[in-house]
Image 1 (spheres, rainbow, N blue to C red):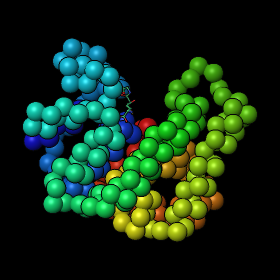
Image 2 (image 1 turned 60 degrees about the horizontal axis):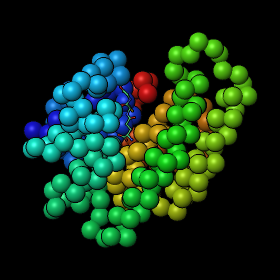
Image 3 (image 1 turned 180 degrees about the vertical axis):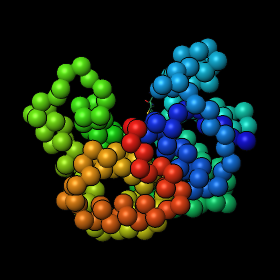
Image 4 (image 1 turned 90 degrees about the horizontal axis):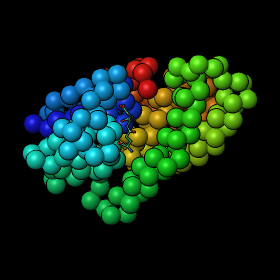
Amino acid sequence: MLTIWGHQGSPNVRKVIWACEELGVPYVRKDIGGPFGGTDTPDYLARNPNGRVPTIEDDGLALWESHAILRYLAARNPGDKRLTSADVRVRATIDQWMDWQCAHLAPAIRALVVLVIKPRSTVPSAEEIEAARSEIIPLLRLMDRELGRRDYIAGETFTIADIPVAISYNIWKIMEPACADFPALEAWYLRINQRAAFSPMSGQRRV
Ligand SMILES: N[C@@H](CCC(=O)N[C@@H](CS)C(=O)NCC(=O)O)C(=O)O
């Protein structure tokens, strides 16, 4: 049985849970990190020397970094290409969007989360919030343009590339529920919300 180490409040853990749910991979999840702590113990560090969540263990393999885990899960059963593709070009496009989420979208969203959601001793100024928003908006506009050309972020089918970008967009929606400036992005997000495996992930306010 595959084990997921990590608390459900973590967006990176939620990516892994979502992929397991999509693929019907049985798993047990152990609460660690965030309010649960425990990522600095020798036992956990032996599995993940980076001391972050998520980590998975699967039949003797310990693996960390959420996107490496997503790629592993998508390729775990060679006969099952539901979340990836046999076509190397499509796989490269999937990788491109996953790297983009990690390098650009997630840090921009996180900068706003730190201002408006995470508890702080000082109230952020309107200028600080607007500066953080202005880093995110061009990225959402880019996604909106791309999703105007196809149904999913890396092609015409749902893949592991949709998971990180949808997790980030979910956090944006929590912070900006009234924002409807991106029609293709919204239509994609509606499609994503209809997936059975997404429902347990959506509506969670903890980020
Ligand atoms: N690049 C890593 C980032 C891992 C990461 O920073 N995880 C956060 C939670 S989203 C974490 O472990 N924070 C400390 C904690 O929750 O205890 C990944 O994608 O897995």
